[in-house]
Image 1: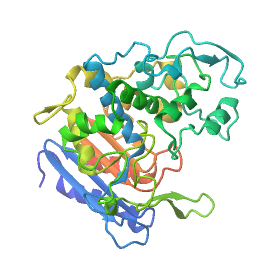
Image 2: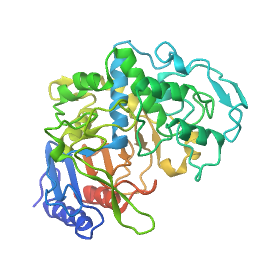
Image 3: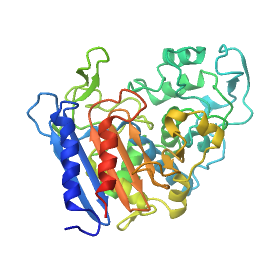
Image 4: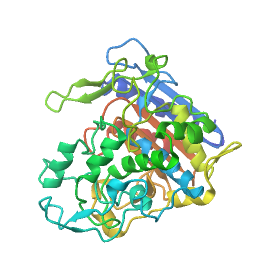
Length: 398
């Protein structure tokens, strides 16, 4: 027997498939949710910690890493709609550290081998990750700018910047750009910079702005840049895999860990924690074209712009591990362009998080899904529990 949205026996198949990852010891626990047409299913299996006794629950809290990026993009567009920021104005007024940039003559050039930037950096550049700095996917590091970013502590990685927002911007501003503003695509750093821009333009910490304008109105009561002491018992321990032994080791404890106190730098590119229900509310708002229930966060126009591919074919072709010929990038999130898998529906938008999270929304099927785990990704290729989750979600819809 089926509902109008999901097929029950296929939801049960989904539960068995996802629980199998925990039973086989691939990771300590999982929480996942699918929502369609007002019908929501949330499941939790395993434990908060490896060999622990506290079970995963619907309200377990996870470090959502790059699932922060769409939230930061929404925050930026709120300020755009209020004309406090403009997409194509220079950001120099708020971020003087980015004024008068120098640009490397080639990505492998010495840091002094530069030319002046052809134009100022804009908010559009930051949201589309085309402002000139970010992850250069050459390993081990081979270029001077990669080593310089590492020395400054701003290489995109699971290790968030530990200094203040001002110190972060000083570090970014101390380096030449790897390409001219608006020309290339480099992952991650633009959204961290966008977070700093939002805070300065709003005149308040990024966390406060997001709480007042997004989390509070949407009822996202467990989302923020750290976990308060009275909730830390719900935070999952984070693990990374040892490449030599294959075993999981603690990356970040819950109590006393990196997310148990307010950070000096509220990272717009990857610093939030959240729960399945909280992030579903955010996704349903985007599927509602900026509205959830009686709360309107953004206009329809803003959401449609955010979820439209902004990249050229050349930019996508230069980053095949991110786009694979089937997707592009809007503002703070990936946008599917071609159907070549069960879940790859044109118009589907969202992103994955390096701490073990995956969240996408599909307007064509009115489907939102969120997968939360505490095992860090090993490579840019999606792990098996990601692909099994999305395969299971799509095989279960009516």
